[in-house]
Image (tube, rainbow, N blue to C red):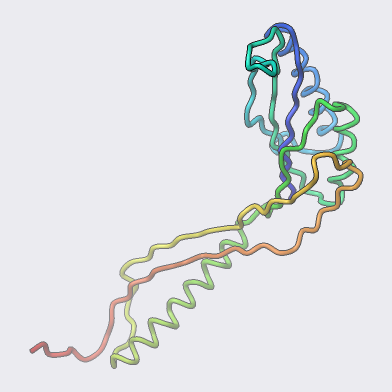
Length: 193
C-alpha cells in the first residue's frame, strides 16, 4: 500500500477564521478520499495547529497559518495518481504532499512465515551443535523472538511535481524474524574434572 502524508495549510486573520479555512479544505479532501474508495480506517489525523506568521525582520504579523496533516493509506497502487489528482483539484494549492512511503498492507501472514522459517533454522543449528557434542535435542526450554519489518520505504517526489506525473514502483519489501530457542539435551553426561 502507499502511505501519503498530506498537509493542508491556510492563512487567516484570526484563530477561528483560520480553523474554519483549514477545516473546509480538510473536509473537501476527506470527501474526495471517501468517494475514491479510501476506507475511513486508512485516514488518520497526525497533527494540527495554528502559528503566528513573522515578517522578514522576525516580528509577529497579524496573519496566522493553520495546518492539518493526514496520513492516508491507499491500498490500490494503480489508483494513487487518480486519487491525488482529485484531492489536488478539491484543495488547490492548500494541499501539500509531505511524504509518500510504501508499505505492506497486511504483514501478518508474512511475519508468521518468517517466524516459522526462523524456528526451523534455529532447530537445524541446534541439532548440528548437539551432534557435535554427542547429544540429541530434547524439549524446548525457552523461546524469544524479535520481529522486524516491513519498514516503510520512502518515495521521493519533487514538491512542484503534478500528481498526474506520479508513478509508484512497489518493488520488494523484506520481512524478517529472529528467534532464540533453548533446548534441553539428551545424551551421555560429561564428567566434570
